[in-house]
Each structure stands twice: as C-alpha cells, then as structure tokens.
Amino acid sequence: MIKIFLLFLLPITLFGSKILSYNIYDRTDRVDVMITFDTPYTGTIKKSTTKSKIIIKLQDTSIESSKLKQISSKYLNTLSITPMSNYVKIVASIPSDVILRASKTADAYGLRLRFQNKSVATKNKNIQAQQTNKAFISSLPTKKDEAVSDRYIIVVSLLIIGIIILFIVKKKVVPSHTLKNKTTTKEKPWLFNQTNTDAQTPTKKSNDDNSVSIRFQKDIDEKNSVVMLDFMNQSYLVLMGTTNILLDKFNEDKPTSQEDFESILQDKHKVLEEFLSKEEQITPAKEAQSYSQKASTITYNT
Image 1 (cartoon, one colour):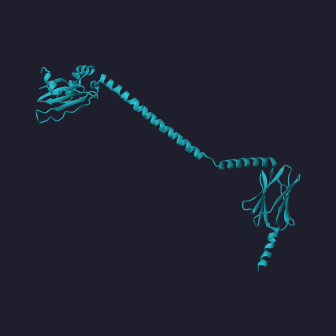
Image 2 (cartoon, one colour):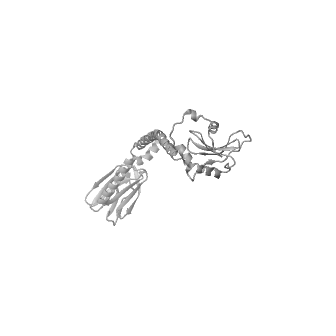
Image 3 (tube, one colour):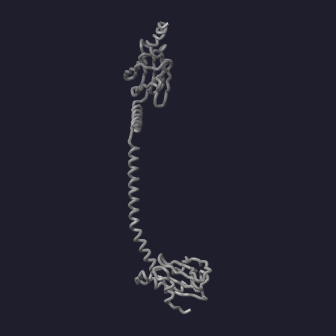
C-alpha cells in the first residue's frame, strides 16, 4: 500500500508545481502576466535578455500544452509558454526599452511577470525603496519615552524648587511690607474715611446700674478703637488701645443710634487725630491705668 502511495506522489515530486492558467492585464503604464499554480511554487526562476526578447525559465514546473498570445501593447508584443523536460520556457517579445520584473504572491500560488518601461520601473523602484527606508526607520527602537520621562522629571523638579524659593522670599518680604502698611494706617486712620461705617451696634444694657456695658464701638486701626461705655447712668466716649483716654461723657444727650455715634466721631475728628499723631512714649504704668482712675482725675463740664 505504501509503495502505491509513493508511486502516486512520484509525478508530483518529479515535475513540482503545475501551471493551471495565465492571464494578461494590459495597463496604461505596464503589462502584467499572472500565472497560477496548483501548489505553492518553490522552483527557481532564471531570466535571460536579448535586444528584443526576454526568456524566462521556470524550474520544477510543467504545463499541459504550449501557449502563444499576440498582444497589441507598447510594452509586450507576443508571449509564448512552452513545456520542456523539467521546466517551462516563457518567451516575451518586447520593445528595447522594456524590462521585466517577476514576483511571487504571498502564498506562492501565483507568479506575476510585469513588463514596463525602464524609466518608469526605475522611478517606481526608487519610490518603493524610499517607502521601505521610512518603514524601516519608523520601526527602529528609540528611547523617546525615556527621554520624555527624564525631561518631565527635571522640569517638575525645577518648578518645585522655584516654588520653594518664592515661598521663602515671600515669608521674608511680606512682614516688612505689612509693617509699612501698619505705619501708614496709623498716620492716616481709616476712622475718618467718610465711606467707612464699620461700627458695632450697641450692646444690650445690663440691668445692674453699677456694671459697665459697651453701647457702641469702632476700630480705628489694629491697636486703637473708640468705645462708648455706659456706667452709672452716664455714657463715656473713650479712646482705648496703646493708651486709654476719656474723650467725653454724656448724661441726657446720650447717643441712641448708630448715626448719632458716627456724628460724635466726626465732631471728635481733630481730637482723635492729635492723640494718634503724638509720638510720646507711654510707660507700662500708664498703660495699666484703669478707666475708673482716668475718669476720676479728669473733670468735664456737662
């Protein structure tokens, strides 16, 4: 049985692939001859050229009978296919400026014979070579990702260092700037700004006549404020802060509204400004003086 099978495969081994068909495609810039095999063609292709002919030998293949084709094309005149002992001979009659390029299909079941002008073929070859080079270059491994990663780390590090430096500089510069603003504020208290109405509403008066309660209060700057105090059925206008000074007292004409308090402050504008502009040093003993001590030493006409 094995011998019979080997005898059956012997013609295939001897003659290789067999040509089943061929087709001719006449194009404007070329002529393509497509040859189809019954099995993948693995034989050798040999080519020889004369002035008006190209002879192709396809080794290890066969064809049932000879073929001859007349073609009215500027790239190919006639094509003959002839079976030989162990190969197939293909003869193409061509003009002198035509060349042949042969290539197999991807599965090796087909063979393409392309006849075209030499200059066109050279141009196409150059274009194909450029495309191949571009594809090769683009496929080369690069360290682009690593370079980008390193640059990203460097940039982020520089940004962080810059932010730290700016923060340190700001910490050193802002205190002096704030001190300057405080000095300016002390020289020109915002109390006397006509548009400023940041005064507190009067507090609820205590039921105990001997207690002290705040009727109105308004900040002049960060250290000083003007307060309207109620004590023993009388109201006292006091400057409180670096020094405590009794500015005025009221009996029957006590201010009862925010507008009255603002009007009194405007009347005392010059007095307050004089106190704030003085540069005399105040001792801790004077700072610790209570309001009652000051009130007892100052006499006002009601």
